[in-house]
Length: 189
Image 1: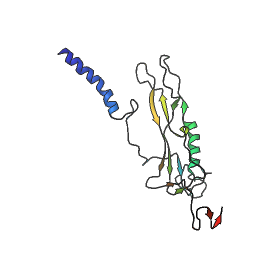
Image 2: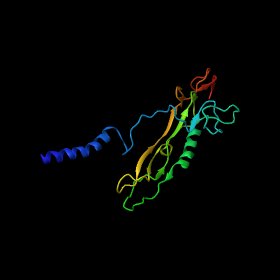
Image 3: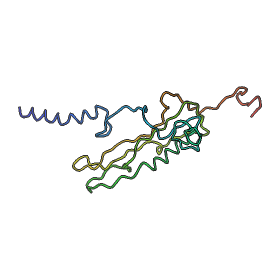
Image 4: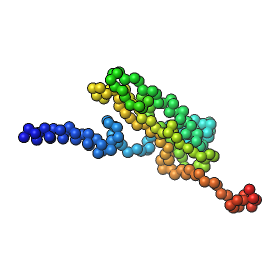
């Protein structure tokens, strides 16, 4: 009877860990939630009515046309890179020398959102996203146990369509009326 109780106790101790992974949680203590952009304020906006000399922080141009969204996704990409340098800071050293930590260098940061308004976007050059354009994992200095000093959290960079709109990003060549393959308006290239 005593062995049976020990087995049940061990099972109960292991059950939360099994349940933790079964629920799709990637990081201890972080609950999986569906990502939704409704109600979120974006860090940057892109719109065909925008201008790359503006801040990109408004969804529409202001009445005086002095500020508004960016005109190109490439400009938003550069703005995200600059914002990441401002937001993501190096983590603090551990209080306890026995804690080595993880190789993740950042201790603070947050998600970044870029919303793209309805329209057709034809980049002048190839749009390339590199690792530095993505999110980061941060390791906070919050104690989570006897010898642990960290809590991991994923921060994401998201480019999404503005709610209810359908932007089109086209990498093809624009063909106009009167153009045929190898010629432009009937003239050989």
